[in-house]
Length: 631
Image (tube, rainbow, N blue to C red; front, top):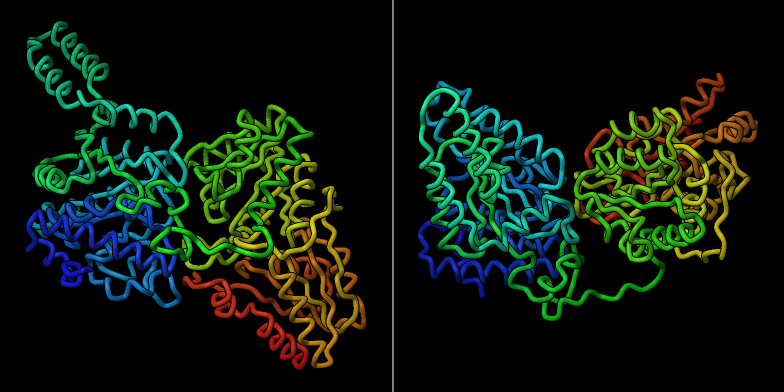
């Protein structure tokens, strides 16, 4: 039953409710989210934990005049429900539907788009400064800017950069730390331990008042005694007051407070609304709150597909293992005979498959938090000291460490292996998460080897190959189930930069890389059914490219044209590499490229998005026929 929720068309309706009605609304929202997400899939646990927090924020502040920036965006489902998107919620993360993250093009209430973590403080500070610079409008200075950090966002370096700058500038800014102790898995790091200590310290508020009373009692007199008194105050505050690190950099710290107590949250935010300067409100919430399966397994329900709302059970998946699990098993197997192999991830041990490695080799596994830049330079330090680090990241998150990959790894020719999961089109998470840029941003780095497997057996071989190279290497592989080929007992080291010819006859050669190889083979079958024979090559390496085979094909009088296929941006990608090699060799040859054009790809199933990008087997088939007619 959603009797109250059904009547909420916007934030103004929320302010008409009393405390008891708000509590009922919170229960209705949780029931609605569970029921809806069970059908669409989505980030359920994070949003279940922020229901009361969101209601309190909308009760006190006036959005969108005030600005609300979420970090990370998957905790904002209640925010979407309260801002006119309830009726569209059945389209959540579906093609043409509402997105799973705040999106500036979707609603004026979405002040800033976010899919990655640790960006909110920086963005919110920019908005606060812009507000203050607009002196023509007196109301601007009264507008509030609120950044809500959750799911481990404070483990990311950009959050600390934002805190540092905000404390220095001293602008009116409210940072709400939604502390649930988790990213996807359990939070790690010294800051997480510090926040945990604050949460379990019931004497905090009393201690703060006692220390403030003590500080006020220190006499304010001149000269050296005054300086000494000031130093004593600073020392006492730092030593005895929890939250002091935030206060030392210029924030007024409030908390920790119960993030599920609506009355208390409303009271605190009402007081905070009247305060000046940077303020940090520490709120303690439970991820998955109100839905027992999500409370007991928050990592499972962080981002989940369709499930049974009554039991929390997901449909059993039949068929091939996932690429992630194949990578995980292969790395564990290789580590058995090589003690120098270490594994690193950035708050994604479950998502990258490294949780199993951590159990097998706990002393060689490192989760550094949501800190991709640190992860890469940390790996570089390990490599410089003789270890063989494997950094497992989603392709989209590896983008955040581009500078470190360039300067700290490639420039120093260090043997760091990048295992890039979720490469290509990842589906319903949309443009913030599609891993369609890595060929382009890795290919131009000197010394970098870039590989992509056609199936799970080749993934194992590529991992072994990468670890044997003695230099920087990246292996990128897609989300979800693998092809289903048998896995040989032993892994093989592949010849560097050598492709594999799968079909060797025809006037056109389909040069495919990674996930596009099976599509190329299917297209070849469709073309053969129409009496058109084509060659199919599994290129394996984007860099170094198999230029020997490429030029052999280009100079073959029987070959009239080349077709490249990649699940990556066309700009700077695999097809560009082929064109460059032909140009450098001075060999004229018609080339037709299939890939992703100059656009950000929307959300939808992978099959829908492949169709949108012209990358399905029938579309490739039609494109090859058109190409043949033109050459």
